[in-house]
Length: 305
View 1 (cartoon, rainbow, N blue to C red):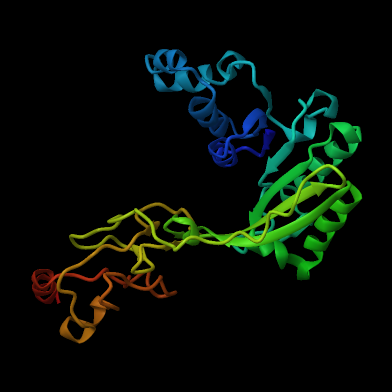
View 2: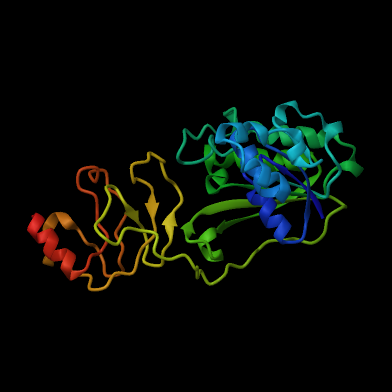
């Protein structure tokens, strides 16, 4: 199946689709750094990559944006300036349209925001195509709050717009931790079926056993300020303010000889024997929680107290 990768980022949709045996015929992305990464990972030949590696970093970043490195694949850098007649034929359009106006981490403007409302630009382009040129499937992804923002009316608008464009919709919220990814990341996936052209329903999709092969992404010796370790199975939360300075998420580690909180100074707050601690509280900028420690480290902490 041929597909187009809208709001492509660095190619997460593309990677999954290609692993499933499908072929990308074009992509659209606005951010120049994402375009550079996407091109390097998915489009460049080895010979081109070898040449780029010889260039200084700043020169390399400019060079890779040239059309020759896309090796003939269709590309657009701004969906607002795409002409429907230029879009190559495909069987599926994939897009995780911008979530900034929908996410609980933002102002939740929903479809009144300038970024998340770009969903309607995609639907406009579909409406400009003759029916025989429209993709049989739409594969859409966004944050879970898409179902709830503005009291659910925005999701109703989305469904109504798809219906008006000739697409029947099915959807399901899936959590990445159920599919081998060590992150508690819930996302709403929507499949649009062009009436009379596409096949059977896709959802529901069953999750895996939750097992993952990521281990030890944390700080065994001591702790860093504002370290966040969320679960003994190595699963972290998705939202991160990205402030730097060690404030990001870290996966739980295996710790030998974890002690009870009463055995150490009160301020140490070792919270369980799984080698992990809870997420930050409002007051934790002064006294962040710490990962479980060994008896030797306990003695050190007592000396500090």
